[in-house]
Length: 497
Image 1 (cartoon, rainbow, N blue to C red):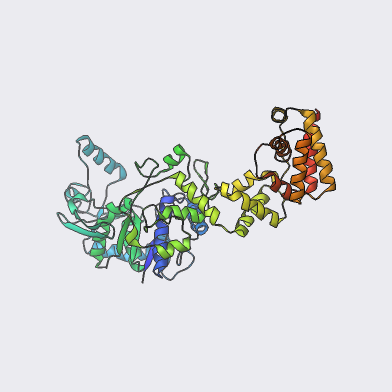
Image 2: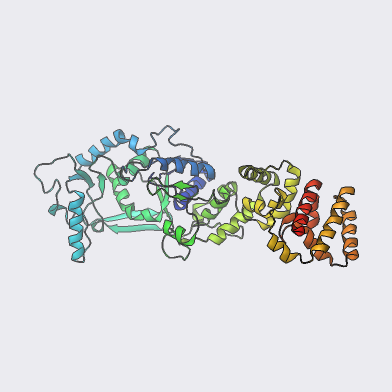
């Protein structure tokens, strides 16, 4: 059975690069009727941020990526590594007993000093079979003191380690190029390498899909699986998401520099006391974000670019994952969101617009008219909030700029007279009778010896406050008669001043 896991470290907000990893795991599991597991790697006490876990959970929920197993349910728990220390103990003892691991006594300062000494000589320091006998560990100390010691993996000397990646095929690494990685820190907490291997084995993980940045630790994991005599899951390392220029990994700095979000949801930094907006707060649909992220490293072929989450699941295959890294394109992201907005049902968009209006404390209770506005204007919009921005004159009386009005409407007396005639006509006629309304406007233009376009300019300024907006007949039909007359009177008062 297919079992995959997403194992973020709660040391900050969920980055879209990590969300892409979660998505690919989720799509693979759902396509193959498997299970998607959420597990928190929370053993890094120094970098742990309590609210990070909540941000990760809320982000996944907003995107519709719902774990089958996780901190709240599942038979292979606990799903937080900090709660699994009792499980790791026997495996640590096994490694030590069989001389696959050993105690080391260097402090951070000791190691920093050694690295600097090597650097000054133009060399790279590796803690391995070539150096371990010269360092502070159980091989060079007669008496072993386990208190405050670290436990390191004993990487065998001059050995070829072979690993297989679904995307890259077979890879061979000489063990002399590897560090004896720390498995247990001096505070007693296990590190990523050991915890992941034990947890993945006990949770029966069949496939590990994660970012390319972790490929350097691949041979270390292979060694651990060999030492435990366990079958290794299938591994696939996803290509990087590059910045907008295609050079370097997508980062927070890129986001600040080029003004695009890298988080799904808003994040309030508890240390810097700053707030970073996410895709949700900026008006993106969750399915549009997932649609974009799916194409960062995956392409099913063909011309189809817009996918719902359900369509992504049915189409997804590991064989369609690309080897090369993908460049982030914020304009393409906007285009994808625009297309998803056009695909929304009118009823769904109506609910979203009503919710936004309520947040702005604007009351508009005619759903039928609201749907007509949405149908007319949504093709011009990328975000739901733009529907309101571009049609705000339907929901509230526009504020009038006298300088602007005087510049556009040059002849005050003619303008006032025309507006007065329109008000009188509205009092006595049905504004929704389009045929009658058109005849009235054309006759009025002829009688006043003005172009019909100028007549509409006067009317549009009165009703919208600017020379923009939808078809003037549509505006008249949507607005209530009393609102039409009120707005026309407002501009007449300005023209009197």
